[in-house]
Length: 498
Image 1 (cartoon, rainbow, N blue to C red):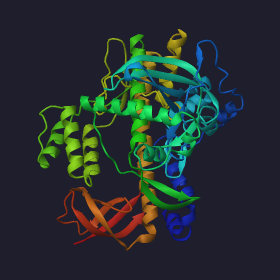
Image 2: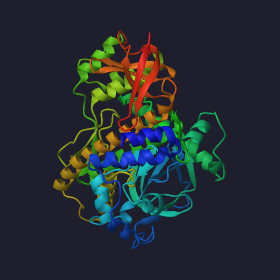
Image 3: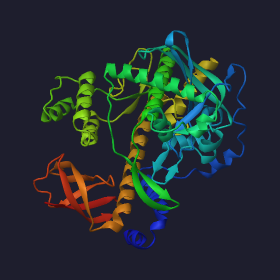
Image 4: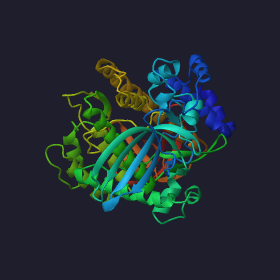
């Protein structure tokens, strides 16, 4: 296979998308993930009914609201819509509509079985391995513009200080009025561009988006007061033309991304409390208090800062804010270091009388995953629990079922993340393969007995310094020469030019 890849790099750069997909399939199978849906699942698609066939008593008609989706430019699996209305006293009613995937994907079916096995969609450069068959996730269960869809609506009122009240969860029929993208909406909200054409074409939508932005900023402000952590990562998104890999582009955070993030956090909190108030078990997404807090404190001390002896989210948040302002170039590496020391998130079962724990990074005690059922199986589990409660039916999962699913979803999500990370490295190696011998400006991102690593400033690619690394330390600017690449494992080797 390596010889085949070498031949590809030299002779067929226009086939990058297909080669990365082939590597991803191998990587998924190595980790027990199935890249393809079984024939039984594809056969079930033919028998599925209308996306709104389950509408009936207790399902509200909210198609008149100014719903819109905001996602990546190329996203086709639209899980949620948002809307906002002004309330007396300066409050804003925020509504998040989540695709009712359960209406078409029933427990025990072959479609559900594949989703339960993989537990998540896998996003690799140029390709998505959908958790649900594409005809569902980008079609019948996607909240596509101009189409009537069933949804679970999560609503609440937000005041000027970000306090949430009047929480509701209910079923409804909705219609997406405009499919919008983070970049154009963010540029407009920040005064750097015109309103997106799709928004301008819908009377009243621009005003609704301004209300959504105001509510989101209030929500974020309140979370930060409680100690929510604000990290920055550099994850370059591959840019393709047809099957050819042309570039790596960093997607910067903007107010549109923040808006959706803040709404999803709020919606997940409302959903968690909905189930808790009814005495029902639920899957929570938790990030525990950091066990390696002493190492985080040591990192802060190396930068002339002092953190408390024990875990303190507010103090850590303030430290990160100061470092972002003082050294924005190196802040992504500091963010990554702290994230690794905090430890990964996991799914845990919350039951009446037993607290599963909160999310340290978000400063949220009540937090589940509920807003992406096309892409994540835990969200579909949560949706089924909520719908059963609304219908007055017994929970579809026992506590024992949820314990097994929590462990499985945590494991498979980790497997998928490793595949995605490896494919991003392969794509970077593939992009740089024709540039062996060239010189680049870089920043040292790691220096230990295990090796020395640098991140190029342009393109934003990380690799290992295999020659001339003596004396290099984290944070230094350095000139490097590209020595070699290996596409399959995603290796990129540099020589430091002293």
